[in-house]
Image (cartoon, rainbow, N blue to C red; front, side, top):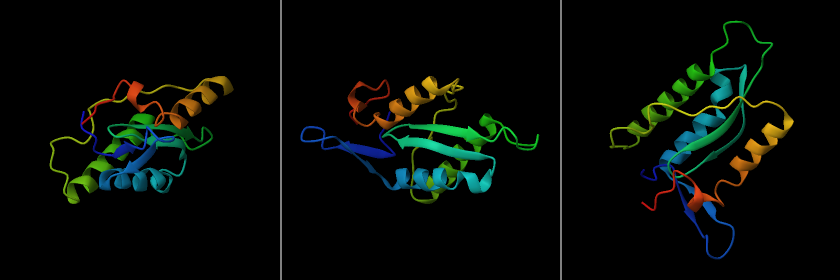
Amino acid sequence: MKQYFSKIVGEALAPPENKLTVYGKIADKNLQALNMRYPHISVDKYVIMPNHIHLILMINTGAASSSPTIVDVVRALKSMITIECKKNGFTDEKVFQRSFHDHIIRGENDYRKIWEYIDTNVIRWKDDCFYDEQ
């Protein structure tokens, strides 16, 4: 998998740094603006990795029944990022894979585990199942 979104640098000397590419900056901008499009959804934590993104989406369960589903939100986010990346010179066929992995967080311990995973993902990049040297 190509490293479209960022490059992990400086691993040998100190904690690695995650440097966003132009496409990673587009993803970052869209993630930060997601709650403007979906007021009942907020991004609680995220990390943009070289070839994928991890995030915790918070849903206001007291919102109206017309609130979007997670599938709707992720589909829209992927679409917004893809459109803007292509406007900014992205030439490969696909920015994202078709599907995505989701997990319903059940309780405080599960939340802390996922938060820690996202928070330390850059440090563990070489052990990540999506790691690729490209």
